[in-house]
Image 1: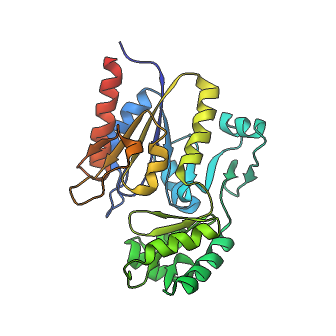
Image 2: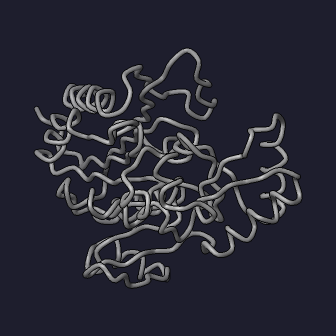
Amino acid sequence: MVNTMKIIVYTDLDATLLDADTYAWEPARPALEALRKRESAIVLVSSKTLSEMLPLHRELALRDPFVVENGGGIVMDGTSHAASFFRRQGLPLDPLESGDLVVLPLGARYETLTRALSEIGAEVGCELRGFASMSDAEAAQLTGLPLEDARNARRRDFDEPFLIVGREGGREASICEAAKRRRLLVVSGGRFLHLIGHDGKGRAASLLTAAYRDLYGDILTIGLGDSPNDYPFLELVDIPVLVGVSHDRPTAPATLESVRMYSAPGPHGWNTAVVGALAEIDER
């Protein structure tokens, strides 16, 4: 008998649902279709910006909320149950220019982050090069994105990706400490470090899980990611998954004892993991 429990899938994008180099998602199509047939929720959780994520959200024909900039904000339809739930909780929702969308801001604003990054670099004694100080062309070269996509990646509100110029040994720990003194956090993504002024992807996922539970009652959550900045939401789900795991990558923390690891990277690993999880759910 097919399990009818509502399934909520939280997924990172780069090197998880999307190929790290081509940004293609098509190899995950079978799993996406299987989730759609079950009317499962698919929540994108990424370091990407609203400008980057909205076209993909539409391309995938998703209706669920999505999480931008490493948990800096939750974007949703202003008439959705999630929006109504957050309003009942007294949480502020800001209207966006894109149709009926609203955002629940969860982090420090971008101007605060860029100013802090400059201060941290001077304090630690090394150059920290963030997106705000890059041209569109430089961001495109570093990310492998087309120029217009790189421009969208630089339209940020809650998260500043940056590089340590020269990658001087031992500086990362000092940078993290300097950020903490400012009540900020440094998290590691696939290509960049990120300076954020919130609790990462975990709080956004936690808030959305509460909203889904309010709507559906019993739910089952699956989370898929590939890097340490995904750990905060993977720690909260029933079935945590890491894709693209290889012998030279750090092991998951003790809080992810039950994590499922797949060597296949990106959408290939994503597809295998989701299809396997759905088959297991059906056998329960």
